[in-house]
Length: 294
Image (tube, rainbow, N blue to C red; front, side, top):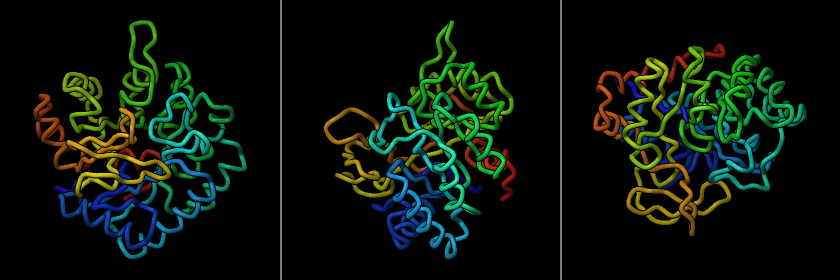
């Protein structure tokens, strides 16, 4: 069983992209916990910092084939749904910003999270998708109609379902409702017992068979001690297995490892074999949605 985590910010006390040694140590911490391959996620920072961290991960990848590439969670996110991302670093997906990230991420950029309602987002989605990068709808205020426009433009994933997006409502299904109805789209979910309650977790698997993707959104405290950490520019406090921005109740990633996510799913009523598929074959299928092959 080869567990694959396509959205993971760090572990073992280290964040991906800070240093080459720390990036390799974070990978090793997740491998020791049972995960075979990882996509290194970077949180929003000023563009120069994100470009520099792409270069760090690129160097680490040369030493570690188990690092599959990079996921950029930002900087093209809705300020109102920023979560644990610094508001001053959020920007619109201008052609120049998109070009800079595509150039810096050439050959290693696998996924980018984007709010499709931002000015220029649909053109940016098409450019990333044409370049073989999986675009994920997330950290967004978009409507179901706007999400569908994003999927038509080439987006093929939703970032951490139920979190940092409008909820599903009877007359306003939102981005998750649009994704559930669209067979082209894969849907990430964080099964850590904090981000999603058992009932909607089980409903997601039932409503989108073969399209749910288990991932961790883990930060440096995963497979490490509790205490105070940095997530990009922001301080995070970890206690009782829960990571929040210091002094708030805002979730800031997780301390999850994928093997634990399987147990959380099973406890919610998801059959074990279904959960395993969501942490093995389905993540790779999601990455291949825009042409990348494992």
